[in-house]
Length: 309
Length: 110
Image (cartoon, chains in turn brown, purple):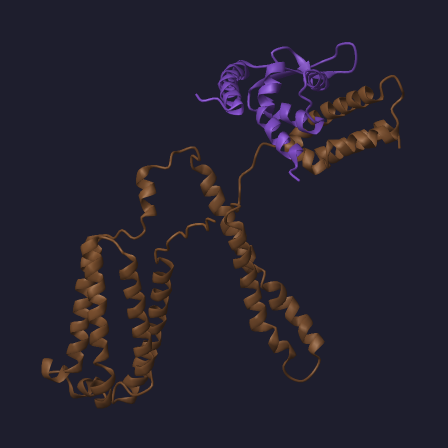
């Protein structure tokens, strides 16, 4: 191939990656510049195909060169978020595969056929998860790119770094709501004496199991007391501390143990009320676990000092 | 072993735009500009320089024009008014930076 033809082919490959309206102009200039370069390198001699290939190899891959002609784009996934993004995407796919793939190998018949069917359904279908993550990232990046990236990070925004600072009015409301809730629950225990006018079936439905009331229920009072003590300490200090976080985690652990204990025996005399209550206990346990994990994540950690010899 | 060439490349990258603007106070086309920079001790890869010229032009820092002088038509670049203003600003920043760096490298106290 002649040097001119090599350059022509290379230039065509570069501009193929550029917007249509830019192609002719860039192609004409690039071809002229490469011809100048080639002539300059060859000096008085006639340039050879080897000279042209050497020049083009140094110039770079066509797609890379085209990238340099384009203005900087926008970032879809920030480098700092990329490892977590990849992990979440892969775990999502893996969980779907783990949940569906074993069924392929269970049972009689042609497992290869079932595997093919699985691949065309869940196998490939599981990639909806990374797909939706990327789509959401694109939307977030587009929204972010419209913001003024040069805007200063103000002290008011920086104040969000203090994640342990609380809104006192909200905590007052939360404590008051909690106290009302406890009062209602205690009232349910002695419903007949608090509201004697209620219909008999309703009173019967809320009749607690005697064993539950005497042995398993009283422990809730200690946990409630500890919870309120912690919340009041946070309210007074205006922020969470390591101590109050640890107390919250300990109380959550106590609640979890107590809820499991409650679920091992009857809570209400009525079987229907009892089964509904045990279902609700499961939900409460899930919330307690979530709260404990959230508290643990917010537990202030000391930055360890480096080892100094 | 530390790869010094990579760090040197990064160092040069930082002054690339200023170097190009400095040479485009006079009309030049891509190849002649590259030669001029190389002769003055600032070789820039052609694959980096030519796209950069187009990007600077799209930012309104350079004006360009096709002209045929003693050969095939070539695109000539020259600083625009905005480019000239930016050049003055960057040149002034460079002067301060060079003074600071000289002080730092010589280890003198300011």
